[in-house]
Picture 1 (spheres, rainbow, N blue to C red):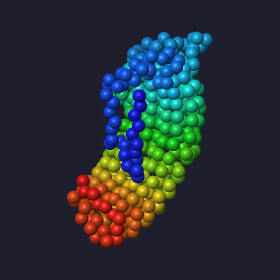
Picture 2: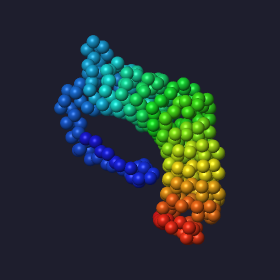
Picture 3: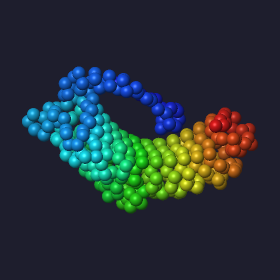
Picture 4: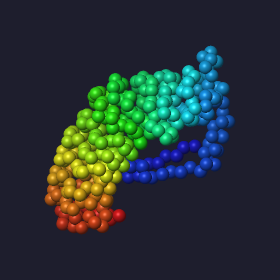
Length: 342
């Protein structure tokens, strides 16, 4: 049984604060229905491994090893698991979910045969950040489109020669990324030639965004939320000329936006809510000729630049009682503007 949640907003497509819950009885029913089929015929394989007690059907005898039809594989292991994998045959897998609790985790070597893998979700539920190894296995996965990493160190990227040719979205949640970004010597345009979305959330050691990320000109969505140590954005941000969504929610250490933001003519949604800006927005903000929605709750702005009167496509501004009056002088120029106070 699966659930689908459409984009919460047509412009920003932000679902991080919208939730779908599933009753545990429905979950158990779905697992029960799946278990009625033979293991080889199941559409979803769910493995919960305690210690190194792998299921009998995942044996290491290649002659007896069956081929599975599943398109989704979920593997959960505990802190005592030794990362010793059998060579399973899973050619149809499109979604792989790995849950674990160890400080060091080796990716399953059978991944390099998952030619149809599109989505990889890796989650560490332990107290300490995890170091991943054997990440080079992903270099063989030409169908991979989405990667989501939670509570892991991405140090493997600092000297990686991998190319994620068809990767469209990468999400980094509660990850250690600061040192890797500072020391990375690879070209992001080579590593992510077709990346359109980056989501960075609650990465506490992120102080600065690498200039090289601004060379990924195909990027359409950049979301950096609740990264409190981030104090500035690169001046080259304006190179992301295809950017449609820029979300900087609750980056409390951020001092402002670079002037080059005026080059983002395709930007439709800008979220600077709870960024504690105390100065005014960049003068070139009025050059955002495609901007339709601006969320500026909790910014503590004292004034707006005169150029905001040129935001002819602006339809909605979300602000609070302290900043709503700043928009009054500009309403005569912005006929379609709706100001929402929250």
